[in-house]
Image 1 (cartoon, rainbow, N blue to C red):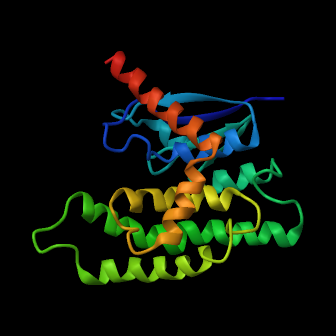
Image 2 (cartoon, rainbow, N blue to C red):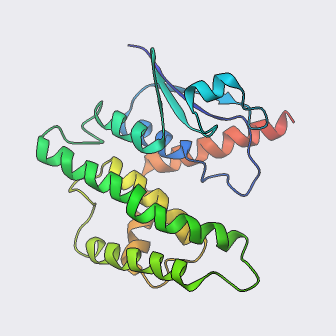
Length: 213
């Protein structure tokens, strides 16, 4: 059986470490117990080979033999098809996981990213109220969902990997204070051994690059 190959940057500054999106894929691979190795692509030199795999010059991408997949959501969905630990095999279960995977990226991350970017570098007038209100509305809806269940689609799945990782960044920037169910959900997700290993491995990957700089 061919080993999956996950490609991420060779190095990033300290601030984004632990939040680069290859973490989502590492986490899923660890949850599923799938064999993989990690390769690097230069952060400072994103050439034609990089663009062949990821046309927006981002990371990660995953290769499985001759197949190359970019976008963390697409990779998570693909890995879900390879492991029942990540996505159930029945049609109803797969649809439920898929809709929550899309919701994490489209409904929640799309609302959180503008807010997060401005939290890192706030304008003099502060973050525009519509941006904050939009995120708050999304989190309030999610709070209702998470208050009544353990995981988004029954058992733990790739949808939870995506959603918890999106919410981790919001929490890092103090955006979950009014949403205790969201906070508890993130805490429960990151306590999983697979996340702990994925996080430690990503941090070690970039620390090793420091040592060779």
